[in-house]
Length: 266
Image (cartoon, rainbow, N blue to C red; front, side):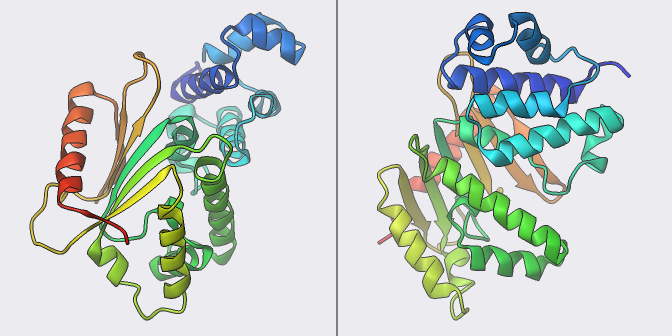
């Protein structure tokens, strides 16, 4: 088996976290880690046929990546060793999402959500109820997913370097859980998050047609001219990632037009 998509994806992930940790060169990282620039480079280049899960995890821990990112990367490295890197979507862990690896690297996140409270702002009770209603996960996997979601929130919203977040929630997404046992707690958390200096929550009133009727999407923004925006869009056939500049600009336009119709949560 030759090196493929998974290896390149892991290599990009390791490079991004190295730079985020303040090591502008492989030499600087190698000196701090007690290894060689050749070893660091072999992993970042994404050309190794096999990547050791422990090595991948060790590097990311040194770079202070969140534990859920490390767990997903180790699972990816394990998949490389155990099967075809071209079938990881079928054989990998159900809760594996590339979005969760990109989120903590972003400097800004813009989200439109029309059906649910967006994941980063959900209480544990809300998350559990929505997962149980979908009926797609076992109780054990729900617990795993809940823990991952809590770690995502801590790493992105509650960290020492919180990400700038703007969220547009449709009025329907807030009305649908009215009267539930977790309603008061969830609304209280939304209002508390809205007071954070890095979080802005807006509500799109029910006015019929609007620019973001394409469905929920997330726009991830990154520092530096080399890093383009990445758009994650959820459709009937699953999640789709798009880094094309024109597409990202179009979706940013949809977000801006939708924001103009929305009101800040009060």
